[in-house]
Structures are given as structure tokens and as C-alpha cells.
Image (cartoon, rainbow, N blue to C red; front, side):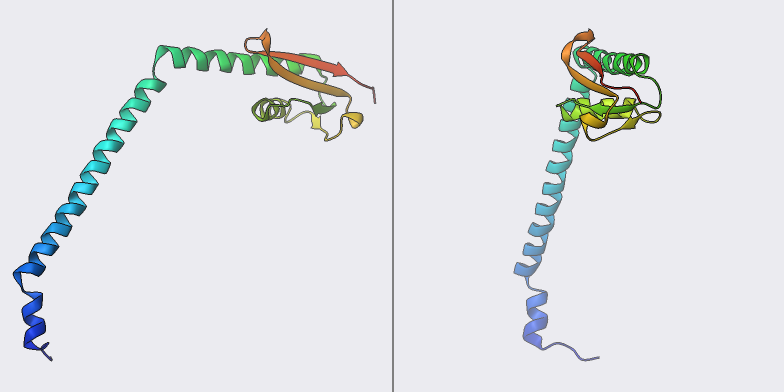
Length: 138
């Protein structure tokens, strides 16, 4: 096997190269430790927030509101009906669509719908108010 020239062999073993490798290794270990400590602290803070009584109460109220909306929709609209979802909030539109699937046919045009559903912030179902308009019979 061929040996590198003496000047290259010497530079690979020089004290300066070894010190540089040790410094780089220490920098990497320190960076990893800082990131780990920061991640643990952030997770702990998030967990404290998510488990606080205020957040849990708000979450329960929101869930109860969604369940109320779903029950009200199923009482107001016969199964199999064509429904147009007029909710302007993306989240409320999604919740109405989830409540109406399966069993109802969502249409993209209010003119084709038998029922138009709108959900807004309010107090009928906890945090929301539901409006169902009967448009036509089939």
C-alpha cells in the first residue's frame, strides 16, 4: 500500500488539526444539547397550556357546539336531501360538510339545493347559530 508523502502525513497528525477536530466536535455536541433543552422547554410550556382548565373548558364547549350543530342538521333536513353549505368560515364549512356526510348530497349551487345551511357565530348551539332554509321539494 502506498504511503502519503511525509508532509501530508505530518499535517494529518499535527496538533492544530487535532485541536480543530476537538473544537468542531464540542461545537456539535453543544449545539445538540442546546436544541434538546430548548425542545424540552417548549414541549413543557405547550403541555402546560393545553392542559390548562381554560383551554380544556374551551375545547369542551367547542365540541359540544359541533355536536349540537350535527344533531340540529339531522333533525332539520331529511336524509338524502340535496344541501348547499353556505357557511363562509372554512372551519364551519368543513364541520357542516362532515356532519352531512354520509346520508346527504352536498351540491355546489344553491339553486340546485333543496336546503341551504348557514352557520355563523352565535348562541343557538353553544358558540354557533344554525340557519336551515327549505328551498324546494323534489
